[in-house]
Image (cartoon, rainbow, N blue to C red; front, side, top):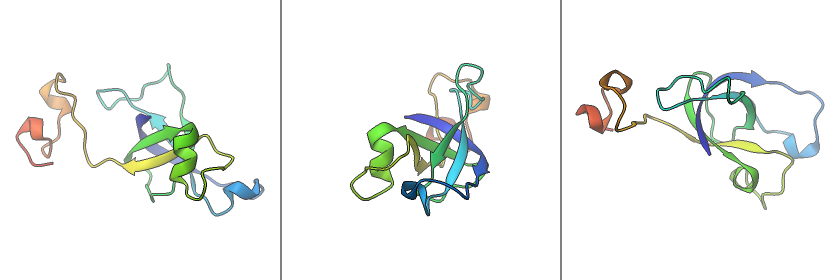
Length: 110
């Protein structure tokens, strides 16, 4: 599982039946500073059963966890899925400017 930011959408007219009706988003992995993790990790295309939007921070699962998140018996032709929309996150050893006002570590309410 990784933390990322939705940076785009994918439209595919022709696709396998497993992907019919599934929204596909492009997610850029982030590091602990909320910066893109590239060049080590490239963006991935993930199914979106939770309704995330471009610009939002999300949790992405891979493999069986991703397929189960998309419902049914979890037997779909996909490798990654968004399993949560992140309100905020905190890295305790991060410098103060990484923390948002809502972060418990910054004295706010999560």
